[in-house]
Image (cartoon, rainbow, N blue to C red):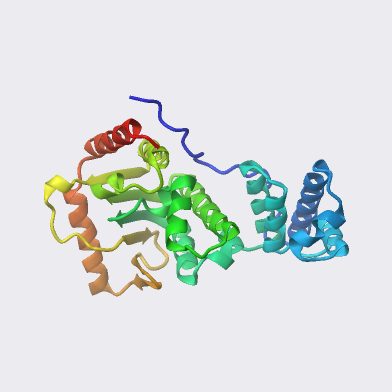
Length: 310
């Protein structure tokens, strides 16, 4: 079998966690100063002056100067526009995003509020609190397991009028969401995929090889259980839409279901309706191939794309 693509990292480096006190004014000020120093260093390394980069954030030289000295609260749009202008790599972008999170004292996903509908922000918050997550997808790889290239093609398809910058921010959000969910022992994740998802091309063959290779890698993580619903099995009454079911620890609502539609989403908590979704997922889990057989199906699909041309 050909070598698999390099998997996405399973954890996100957190060099600031030990030195910046969260939730304090001093911590926010320190993060703003560190962020400003980093921005100045990247600018100077590229031989750019304050006057050169002021138009990037639609501001003045003094505005850039205040941002680099940490004297004014950093705005995510300004900072990320500068980061993209400087051509920062993925590791440097993670540094920028983490510093922004500390400087603004907000949830990490709030940095993407301009490209994230409210109903999805709520789901991301709930995912971080869940003990178990079960996801059923009938058309595409779920966002929490998408590679950046696969996600980029998905975003382009559903947001055709989005700018390149907006599209990249949505992709970054999905990548950050995945890294955080994969870190630690919880939440435990079960993913039920229709076999058609493996065969439905998103992008070219190279994109699919990378995505299927990433599914194989994710399936080796102890807390991740990927199960495929084979077309030949003939299971019936499969929902025509994706479902996400979350279970929580004691101390609050025990569970809920999230059902997304084109222009919004439903959060299901009423016992009778919740029973319907829980039972649907239970039936799908029973009909799905075993963990080992599911891995074989992913490998078979990967081999088909390996034999294909990009």
